[in-house]
Length: 435
Image (cartoon, rainbow, N blue to C red; front, side):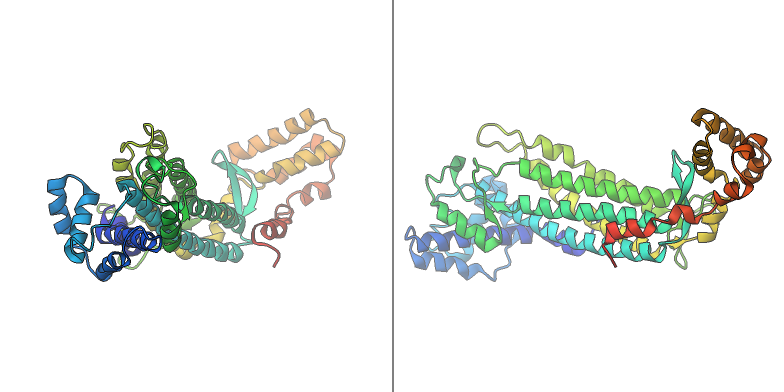
């Protein structure tokens, strides 16, 4: 990813230096295990650790690879330059390139998942704070973009909190599924390397040994990982789209923070645009873009081909770096979001009383009016409000058919906003637990 949408901790996971450091640790731990098993001399295994503080020369490795056309061999050649050819002669014994590449990739994905999990915790904290702050802030709920019935801004934040809490669980599951390593040799049979080497290397790297690999770790694990990231990205967009709609001039119930000196348009000085949440919508598309290639990587020829390799070299960094940036940006947007309760009430009352139509409908049916007639009575008065902006309650009170079934007091009681918020505490307890 370009620096504009990158954060340093996540970027560092995918730097060549990090990759080569993980490769080195895999090889060194494998040598330790083989020495413990008596397969190679202990002094050779110990010699490999002479490079533990070496900063591997990426340019030199690239130079060697330009000749060998093989990245792992290029690295092993460079490692021998530091350790000594004789001392390093048992490095990579019985192993295949995928043992190093796949195990390293999964280490990187686990580290990336750890960052994403912490990102999500930060976002959840921000959403919870704003939910509690606006628990009782009335706003109109919308279906199909049209006024429906009253809700609260706190419930909107709580809804997003619950969604992101599910995403936190998805990220943890994805991390657990990807946290495997394989040191099983050509076609995964352990013919030339003891399974105990794999167990030792994985334990040292914080992974589980893959129960059965071919020459690669099964790619359904990676498909599930990137699918989880795609779901998280979609949830980021879900929040972003809500904020973008709320910031529309004719709505203006909430808005992104607009900092001192910020400019909204090169042509129109009055503009305050929802640029951050529009950006988040775009970034979500990039993360989702990685899901289908990850799923297509599942089907490999026989015990191994490398059709997945070029894909993963791109989508691993791109998806994790982008999502990390997106989660951090969304957290900041939520923390600084400007909320306008007065505008929420003004919008709800744009067509006075209209959003209480269901309560009147139910009251009429409970008073003995058929549902068909009750719907007709309510709708004909509601349409007057749509057309002229008159007061819905007043129209109902002036409708003889309505007042024949309901008293003035019964009609007026149906316009109590508290009716719609009486279960907010129950919902909050479900989402956040009992206080």
